[in-house]
Image 1 (cartoon, rainbow, N blue to C red):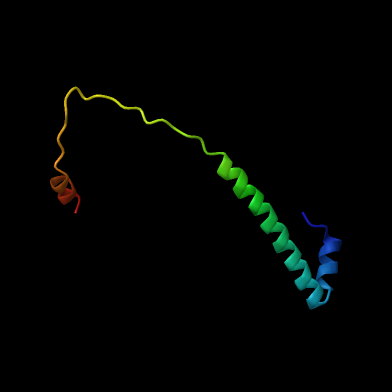
Image 2: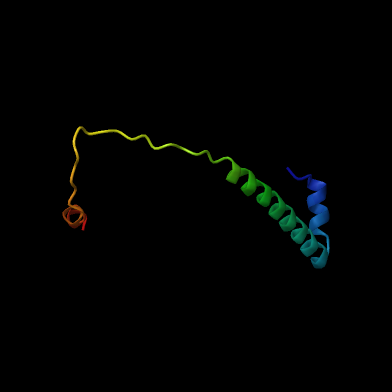
Length: 70
């Protein structure tokens, strides 16, 4: 939470000072987002698809299967 006295100082600051503050906040957010996205990208784990047998070879008519979906 932002201190109320800080908010009052911001409200009474000039437009250029407030724009500088907004630019500083945006730069800070960009830096944090960059670190969050790199950490998130590293969190993916590989997986192994498990295969199984149905006991026999299953022939699939893809044209018929996709025609039912349309």
